[in-house]
Image (cartoon, rainbow, N blue to C red):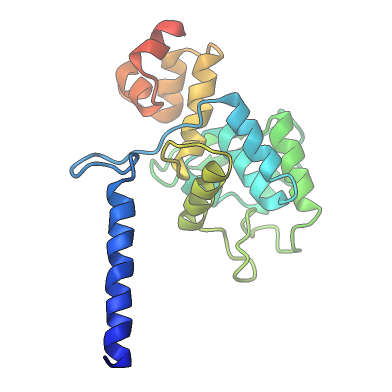
Length: 214
């Protein structure tokens, strides 16, 4: 048997094993299922990710920023250095949302302020108009949504979260924990630009049992 045929046979066997592992994966979405990202529901999981990222200032900052501002990933990554570098806790900056084109004030809480300041100590020097969250692939290039999506999935797996996460999970986590803390659904509807309360609860992944417990 020639080398090429042996190589092809090994590849076929590897593919069979991979298919078997995928087919046996209990978390694999069924054909036709709608794949959605989930919020990070447990406070201890949020804390575990922060602990995981404690030596990665940029990643800790973007994670903390995302779960505390309810911005879409595209708007998080469009935030500029000059938007936040001189802000104190409780102060706001204004961003025009990419999807809605509406202007929206964004406040920095204490946790977000500290994470950003920690990041700015090691962030490469750039012009004030450069993106706040820099990619490592080029000078003054923003971290991309696809990269942030992959990072959030990776962080979730590392701390043992089984639900499907993605960059949108940061925004959803904000809403989920705000609701659990008592923020009214109409207020969250306004933040997320939803048309009814059911849409907001579905968006945040709050099921009927959790609604009853709120």
